[in-house]
Image (cartoon, rainbow, N blue to C red):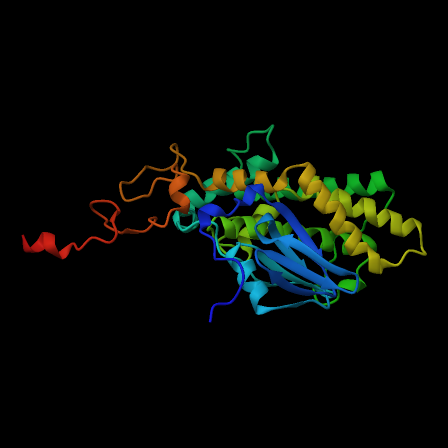
Length: 334
């Protein structure tokens, strides 16, 4: 018996990650599906959400999801993150919006070579300091410059909003113990991490193969998210927290939701999703000054082939990658 609903789409038919909305948050509801739409049901009614228009679903306390909904979410390439009252826990992601492993292969090559690894690290720091030349700095100096930059962002945001700031304190196992600023930072960063994770997975890259951060399953997520905190989540967190500090009657229960909505608007206004796509591709693309092109490497310039079902080859260290689906034994018998 065939189940009713949307026919599984080809990847070419799905909107690319740069064309989607950043994230949307739900809590205390049931997630189901109706044809090609996600349905969100709560005590106020039903909301229909086109699955292919979303990058990330943040699901808070009290959410339940049907199997049919997860089937649609996975086919549409949507990342799902459960956000609990005690912090963020990542549980699931959609399928990549590409059949090709090209960006993943590039990422693995760059991570595995100490020299090329450092090239990517320098690119990441150069994005933070666009008006400076950081090519001559050591890794220790780069970390020091970044630490000073972030401390300055914290201090300036605290001064602007009239908030006392004693440093970042985050306890994943006890979210509510933090002061308003730290709670706001955690809530904002969770949204940014979710979006970075969605973009990385959609491009076919690995969240765990990081360059500045290493050793964690989401190392590359933290690498990418850190590029945008200073202009998005940090200023927003101090601004929202200052309102709660001034008004003692405000309940901190509302703070994460307000932060999420402000972060969502800021990500749209600053085109962060589109910039993430561009920046990740810039970081992983071949640098002709630092590496030689090998015949066996796959060209990354053909964007159309990135979603092609024919994006699979057979490895040949001598001849370069060769065509799949050919009966090569016939050549030997001739």
